[in-house]
Length: 244
View 1 (tube, rainbow, N blue to C red):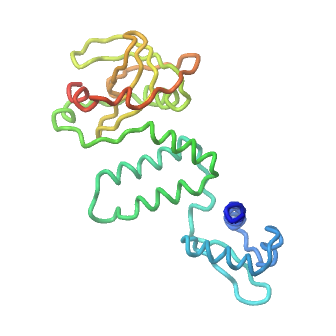
View 2 (cartoon, rainbow, N blue to C red):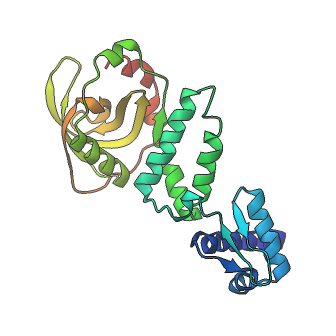
View 3 (spheres, helix red, strand yellow):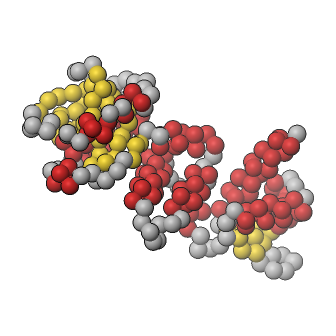
């Protein structure tokens, strides 16, 4: 019974946050009526939100209301899945850098952003996040031969990666040899500042790793592929990448 009550409270808190995010000023009575709870329960819920860090403002007096602080910017921010993943990934990359100043709150920020989405969306975002591997900084040798990434190719790759669709690419290897491939982009690996695609290569019928900056053209193919386990791609990955 206790677990059921906890779940109902969490659902109610989500609804309450949604009402406060609207930007309107709500009276306590109106909020309690909307949530079908007593005024006392509403006060407890508001106190929970305050402890969680929500900046609530209240107007004193009989007709006073409750709202989120007017300068709180994320309340109306609408992001699609791709934008959410970009944001969370950016925060994760900055965490990896490990700056001794200014970036100490990134983990908490990333956690709060994740929790601001409904549970079914959080699961999707989390599973997508697990498909992006963040490694160490690339060596000076690798950085010295980084090329300009073709934006159109990167955009196509991102869409194919997100939608689990095969991708036809034009690729140039370390020796400068060009080839056409159809790949399944299962995982992305960041060896900062170089991106790699951990993929199933239809031409070789095997796992291959492609540097994003060496893909000069990309076109999404029909169909979808089934995601393979990450260990299938990452075993020995660091040694392989160092030779690309």
